[in-house]
Length: 119
Length: 119
Length: 119
Length: 119
Image (cartoon, rainbow over all chains, first blue to last red; front, side, top):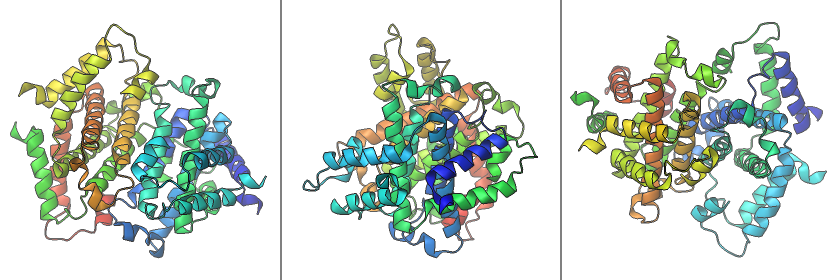
């Protein structure tokens, strides 16, 4: 489906912002800040939940659409950030997975605390 | 290109985590937290820059790959979060853009402070 | 004034949470997450503002109380986090300033990007 | 002890920044962003830990000083933010506790999800 292609969504977001003259607000600095705010709003849904409760959020009819909505906000600002800086997010991720496959061999168990600091 | 398809990247990330037995750490709560940390790391690159400097970060050969790398980290955790909860991020974003086109008519100028609170 | 002493505020927060049986939610992990959410909410107020507009937020009667309120939330979770882990936040900050005075000599101009990464 | 007074620490931070000519970077917008980054760095320490592991971080000699250090960074940026905007953080928190005592009566059990959204 055309509409669910990253490139198409990115173009719809760019057209949406341009039509409202929001380009003046959409510096990379501001978009990175907005992305961080939306990521925090997603996290907020989980902040008092146990790990087990967090795994069941989509079963709650009040919470499920809030989660999907915050996911949409995070992705929207990530794609707009990439648009203004000319970054191909999918290519950047593919390159990162390639690198990580070399850095975290399956044969060596990894301590998750160590993992993060070297990621 | 197959490798740059969201679904393919999501499957590579899932296989990567499964091979290292990281599934135990990948609760939705923890992944939302990791996503928020990576978004903050992306923002950190911009925190002391002026709006004008922020628009030129990709011209600096030391900074450009850091930006792309943090974008990859944000997208990686967003896709892993969506994977464990069965959320289609692209569909969620398409639905959100549809809704926002109704909520922010082009003809009514929008104050950006107002915009955010009702978004 | 007694009420504006950090130790007193910390004790009021602890009593407040205990009276409502919120201790079960107040793991260090959850409180660190809540702190991060509140810091993002503070930042959100500024996200579309220019540097100049950001310097004048307290002149706006609608915005000033929101800023003070988010500051209170950040401090509340920071103090509750320190309470459950037995950390003296003021002593930690005094020690950090002492260290930074050695690491960032006044005589050597510091690039702010460099500053952060080594802070 | 004089050194562990909030006002004194705030003045030391202001003198430290002034001596290095960092005032130009310390807009409220940038300081709120830096605060958010430091809060995320504190959270990062906990991101893969279980609730139980998170309660024992100060027992680990490698982790304890990192936690204290990030607490210092969060408090440092919070106090610098308050300094540039003329906000009394302790008074703001005392006022917030007063208000919350009215809004969350001890007699009515509070759902933590509800709690947050109305906080």
